[in-house]
Amino acid sequence: MEDAESIVKVTRNYQVTIPSNIRLKANIKEGSFVKVVYDEKEGVIKLIPFKRKRLTIRLGRKITVEEIEEAIKEALDEATD
Image 1 (cartoon, rainbow, N blue to C red):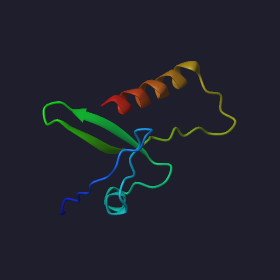
Image 2 (image 1 turned 180 degrees about the horizontal axis):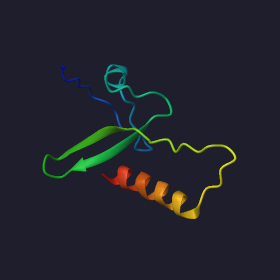
Image 3 (image 1 turned 90 degrees about the vertical axis):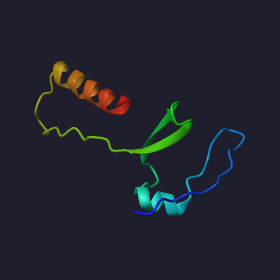
Image 4 (image 1 turned 30 degrees about the vertical axis):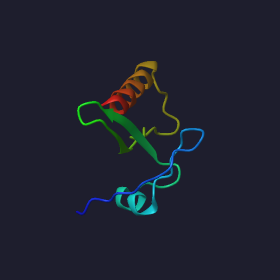
């Protein structure tokens, strides 16, 4: 796959717009989450599409505190990897 590259401006609020050609290649849509990583070794900022796991819960089934805590722990572990 060919790399995509663009130059974007940082706004007054330190926001940037991800160019459409890169959004399409990375399958980033409105409402998507991305992980922002600063790689000190390379001196670059990376945006990594973040795929959240959905917690499946059957209606009418009671959920234990342990199940909720485990789901939170898994989500946090995934977010910080």
